[in-house]
Structure formats: C-alpha cells, structure tokens
Length: 300
Image (cartoon, rainbow, N blue to C red; front, side, top):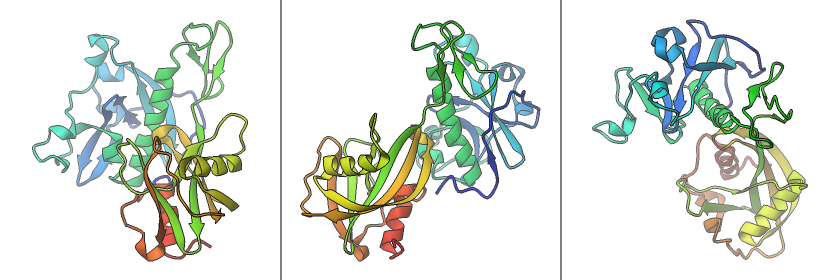
C-alpha cells in the first residue's frame, strides 16, 4: 500500500520555519507543484523558490526520513497579489501527448489521480498527506461556532478560535473496507457515479454512535442486501485522499447469497471465484491488497 514506507514518517506537530533545504509543498485546487521525470515526482526546495513564493504562509507539515516538509497555505480567489506569488507552471494535460507525462524536470501542477500511480512512494505519500492538510487548513479559516477567524494552536496541530475557544483537529473519517466471502467466492462491487471505475469491495463510513463492527454489518446490508458473520479485523490504511482512516475486515456470508444492489451506491456487485477475479483493481489501496490476498489464497 502507498503508505508502507521504507523510511520513518514523523507527523508530530512542531513550530518551525523552513530552511533553504526544506521540501516545499505548494498546492492549489488542480494539483501539487512538482517536477516529473521518468514517472517520478520531485518537489522544489524552499531555497529554490522565488522571493514572492517564499513570502507565502508556510507551516511545518511532517518529516520523512531526514527531510522536513513545509506546506504553503493560501486561498484561491483571494486576489491576484497572492496568485502571482506562485510559480508559473502548466498542467500535464496540456502536454501534446495526453496520458504520458512530459520529461525534463520542469514544474507542473499534478493532480492526485495522476500522482498516486507514480513514484517514488515517499513522494506520493507526501503529496497525499499534504492534500488532506491543505483542505483542512482551508476549511478552518473561520470558526464554525461564532464565525471569527481561527488561529493555529501553540501546542498541537489544531485550529483554535481566540474568541469562543472552539478547538478543531484535522479531519479524519473512520470507514470500513469489507471482504465478504462465501466459500471460494469473493463479493466484488463497482461504485455508482464515481470517477473510480475499477472493482472494489463493500465500503462505507461509520455513523455517529456506531461501532466499527456495526458499520461493517450495516454497509454490507445496505449496499448488497446480504448479511454477514464471523467478522475478522485485517489491517488499517490512512486514505488521506478523502480524509479517511480505513479499517479492513474479512467476514463470511450468513444466509442467502442473493444480491440486492443499492443503486445509489453501486453500479454492480457479484460473486467471483478466485480464478475469476479480474485484475482491474487498485494497486495502492487496502481494497486492492485484500482482493489480491483472496485471489492468491492468502486470506486465512
């Protein structure tokens, strides 16, 4: 999975200023600023940026290995004086050969649907985490209780309202990924109305006051009309592309195997024997790993 790194990830909050060698993470709505060379991402160093870009608001993000990463925070639509500080870079879609990334190490605005399939893994991870942090900082400019401007906490990664005292932490939504089995068959689904068209497992977010195990039972029943038993926790994954923390579960069918699709959520759902499982699923996700393990008989 994309977060399985060979180097240490340190996300402990600290108050720090970027140095010339710090990795600079600059985002906007249509992507992150990065170099693209032979299918690999590389981010600019703070010292390589123009004085105007260095004048943006910077926050310490995290450390990967020995590298410190800092995130530029700015709001689109706040005026040309802010936008003019950003480096002039096109989007890869403007490349003459659509679908193949340009070479030469120049800067581009790269979207998550593009960079998640690139390398190296630590750069993809950094881009994804920065995407989640950027959304959170942008969404907490003002207090949701009284409407006053929020400020950064002096002791932790949090936003604090100096007027009413409301404290807001980074958004993390618990969700489940469920591998439902019936003998040597696995339940595979496809989402309805989403850009992701590959095969997946039943998935969904936990509701207020609900245990994560009850989320498994409810989501399977809602989306497919099936009931399950013998829940077994597998592992988790921080899916920061959607601010989620995924909990992977395996379980077995209880009762009838007749599927009733929740059409608002799924476009299709069906039972697949190990040898029938299509190869069209994500290679970087918990979903993909769980499908792969069942397909290869490693689901015990």
